[in-house]
Picture: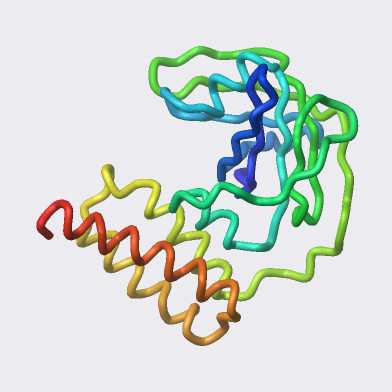
Length: 190
């Protein structure tokens, strides 16, 4: 199973890096996580250096969209059992330690084990607009991998759910993502 989360790592100087990431969770275990960052990435470097990370479960889709559009300054608080940071708006978080690495030229598998999990607020469910923003954010992260025509077709479909159910947060996040697509289009004369 893959869960869309926000992973926070930090370097040896204590500088936190916030990144949206699909985390793999084996069905047979509730305390094992596989993080697969692409090379090169700050998440990969920090996790290999510190051997720790915080997986944040968040329903504010602005964090996902913001991280992909240059807005990474989200309020943080200290983790409880590891040297790390937690999103202040996280509904829950899991602190993990790296236990082994399966190296790969493109995307190494980082096997982690939970050392602490905390719930902060109830999850009340996603509306279709939140889903639309999450899916659009994933598409934005693949602008250089997927033809723009396909991305635009997906965006057009996602816009239907957005327009029916969005609140202010979702509309703000969507605007950030659409600006990235428009800039990509202009820069590539498409």
